[in-house]
Length: 457
Image (cartoon, rainbow, N blue to C red; front, top):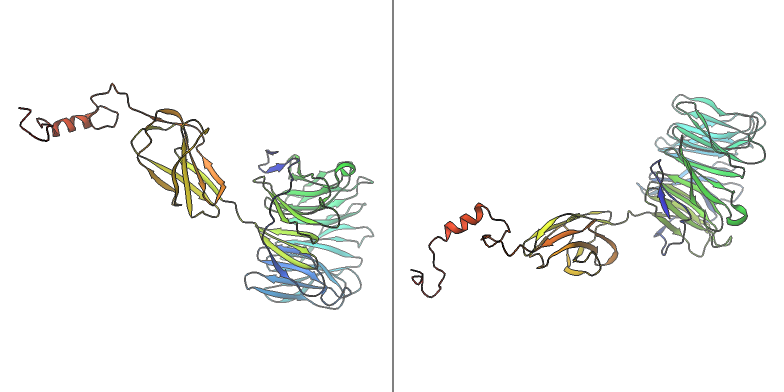
């Protein structure tokens, strides 16, 4: 079941049932060792890479536009948990024995330091010129930020309790917060206005928030005893909370871009993790990868999803669905039997080569084929219209190769036979007007005997 929230996104309540087919996945990186924690922005994917061993993890990337693998950082010590926005990659770096935040400009091929303060700086995320991270310089973890344009560091939240695992999509920063005692909550701050919001303070634990265009999604344990971990969401600043997925088994580690949410899903057991997605705008559930291997830690940008499967990285593109829409006749039209009418439609998404067209005269109970297949040009000249008299007519179109891609008239229209009492209708348009007088004048004093034209006189 789905319903539309006031915030303008579709949310699925109890809607996460399995789909029949996975997306078509492609290998992204199958080097030796484990490739993990991918992040994606547009045509750039980054990840931490163990091809040189677990004690020297490095940052690699991939550019779809080149296409080419990118070596970003291979310094000694571990470089982990990368994030990317535009041409800038940031990550957590342990080359100096502690956690520091480094960056790399893909356009200039230059590495730079973002934060090298005492204490640990970990879990960086970036959106545009703003980098955020979890910072322990004051003894407990707080949320800090850095503006790459102004070269200025700033505090986002430094309460007395733990604050960590930030995510950012300008102007919103969201994070995990322990200020309310023994349970984890989600808080957010608008960097433009300075407004701080308690996103979710339910008495159960909330964790791993992600944000895009003001929509926050997170893991939630409120139904853990019966359902496992679920996914919830909320549109900032004042939208109501909604369920993204509460299927049996755990749904964890969500990522969001626009209206598309993806996550790691345990519905098939902890030994066979899968990746699922849900489009908040359309209500469509996606089985991204449910193969026999364990799939985990998905990330999404636009319509592209990247994730780890086994030890390697894969990606898949979410292809826009084919949507056929009848434009005419679409309800209320009055059409004369035996005359002609144009059937008009439009196609969104991948376009079928041909369209099959049919009509019903009994509001869809039975259907008659008009044409088994015509080129998908968006128009078909229907002539002649069937010789019937009905106020319950519909037109239906569909892809002959996939009947699920279909549409029919939104409401009934009428095909009618002209009243036989209208004997003065000489041109057959079911309307007595000057056209009929023109026919009369043209044939005035003509004789209808084909054998003898003088018979009439």
